[in-house]
Image (cartoon, rainbow, N blue to C red; front, side):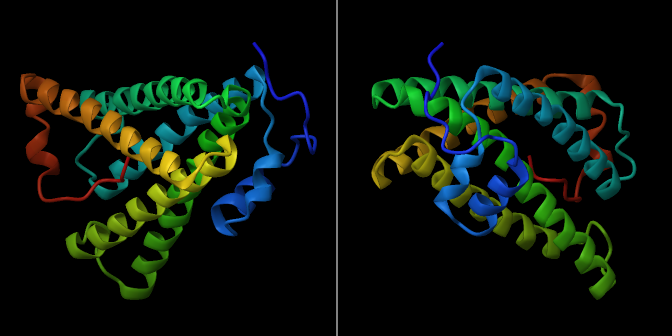
Length: 215
């Protein structure tokens, strides 16, 4: 496959690239990511660890929800499916917009930047617990925190797409809308599967009324 031939910087400082893009909002952060198949595979592999941490986070929020359960496995599976579907969709959009060469670096940056909202808001939630002494699964507190996290994640997705693919604002927003559509489609499929599976349904009473980590 054809990748970006010109690498402005050697892609050896991914953490600094994430910091520039996700924390500073600096478009130069994209140059710290490499547009090669090997780096995309590495970034994809990191999502497995991210899924594992999300599962552990769900267990901490809802102790009755076992780490190794069909419900948790179904959440992990749907998350991976969403990630793969988004890669395919954004690649096709990049081809349509004549940005195929930019897609490799963009995909790598987007995958790695998935880590930042999760880590940032996990720290905020844990810090909030110690400061306010509220229960770990306090409904109002975590509803607000998850809402802010969702808004920030949308902005980060838009910014990385606009910067990485070098597209216009309206194209970046179109990508976001398609991104949301893909996510909703898979989540609706997951809900349908859960509702029609007695074993998964039997686990729902254990988590009703509680908040879970946001996928």
